[in-house]
Length: 227
Length: 227
Image 1 (tube, rainbow over the protein chains, first blue to last red):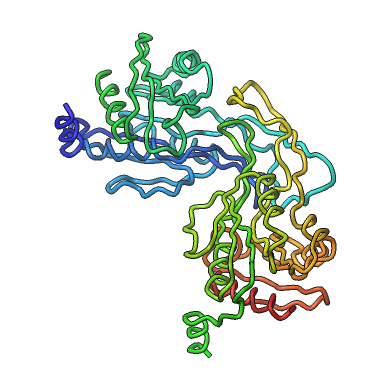
Image 2 (image 1 turned 90 degrees about the vertical axis):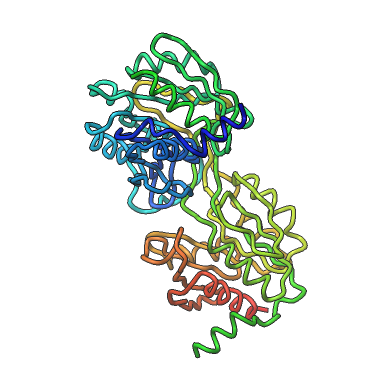
């Protein structure tokens, strides 16, 4: 079994040959002013691992990524974004040509209503920032999809499976990867992950803790089973 | 002149031998919930360059740093912090033993009033986050200082020198490094910097664009002139 797994990683099957896959990764960064921003703890590692795995299996991979410190996998086309709006635009622009879209990025739900062009001077007392909703990229893709397979991620700290199932339905996704980011060795910044993969029939499988690259291959396996 | 400069960097004078220097660097990160946070664009490069330069010149260096992706310079003692409060506590704890404190970190002025222990679910419509003031580390050090030389940074996008002079006075610092972070090749994330160094007599000198390590040495030169 171990030998098989190692071989599977070392000599990946070319079962994504000819497929166009778009992967999103990393956090979004929303400017409050030229210095301050709102962001989240996503390191981009899960999304980059999916891009790497898909490329190794023969896909033509477009990686739309927020700011990370990761190296772009060889052969993968990188599109760098910052805010949720810039990620939304990049994804929408490339959506029609894709066979599979896997949304591993942690897209900020909100952005500051009125970002300031100059650094806001601090003042006595408290401050309140008004936030407005960002476009919901997965929801939009779910509305627009034709032939595309749509894989979403739900990163939660509580009621994981319940939230993930609701999200799968609401967003019209084909698979949802439920990621308990409060668990040890899973979620943001870690090199390993544990996830549940949920399909539209409500079937869920648990992927035990493994490297993000191994988890990436399992997600691609499940995605291909949908065809 | 160039040869002199190169030699000065290659064989730095040991003019900080026996001195204890504390340098702060990087951003602070303030949790909104386990996933989202408020931060700023500081990369830590300027502070790490000062720590490296001071160590090379013989100082015993303590580096109090927010989250960065930088390597700690050899021989420098690193204390890792995240929020402004954790940085405040680390700096205060080590202040009394220091000869020189150089505050290159970009400390967030505000933090969310009530960070949530679980990921906040998005909701329809807008959201407002209430922020409260963080402790002002430089102001506290200015009140507490006895023998210490205190060097502050002012990172601004407008009215740079005016703000920096006001800050020098108000915080009871000995030198202020004014950093126009909106300029090309200066400020956050870049490998070079251009700064003005302002002393309590109101004298200001401009350090032309140079590597952050060279700028670091110039800041240390000016600091030593105060003795």
